[in-house]
Image (cartoon, rainbow, N blue to C red; front, side, top):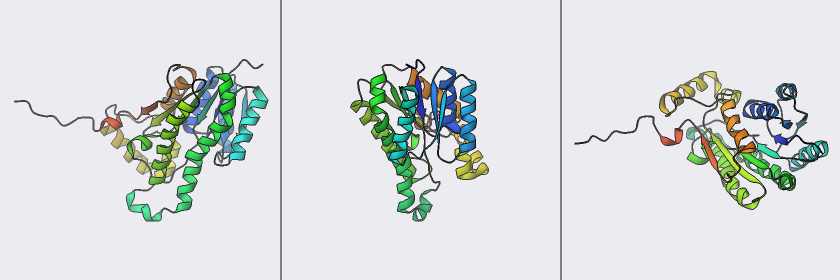
Length: 262
């Protein structure tokens, strides 16, 4: 029986997923490194985890496809005979304000929901029996988009709202054996945002966040990964929590309106 705990981290070739996988590896976990398109980056993530002492499986799989979700879980359980954590990190978006709504089509909307929401459910469904056996944990990587109704696009906001609602439902449905929580980051200084809006656009948004939010900083992938690892390996009495990691964005502007006192 393998004594090292095992985590599946979807979308772990880059960004938050790669940072989470490495932090778990450094804490003695074995990992499934999952990717859809970023094979080169995923292999680098795998190498970093193995250098930290982890045994790994590198698996290509689109979480929007149920058969690929089930195959991923089956491969992990066959390799290690256990699954202790699932980090649902895989996600996609399109970038566009309200002025570009007419450019959105149903196919784009459905693809984003398929990956961000349905894919998450399919991974949970496939992992649930093993996680119940190990009394494990699920962490869903959501966004303040789902909590505040702001974000890159309407489909993305809708998909993360669904993630938040499912987190609450799954925390009830899988209790008491499995804890289910979500992290809801704001702006993250990762390639994902730069690819979506370009370097210049990203720098403008980042400067705006730093100026307006109470903590005056955007999150790094490592910031988010630290919270995920804590929810996976600690937080023993926490379930059904939507943890905002937004530098205080949800509080509004850094300086509230001051009411003069007579």
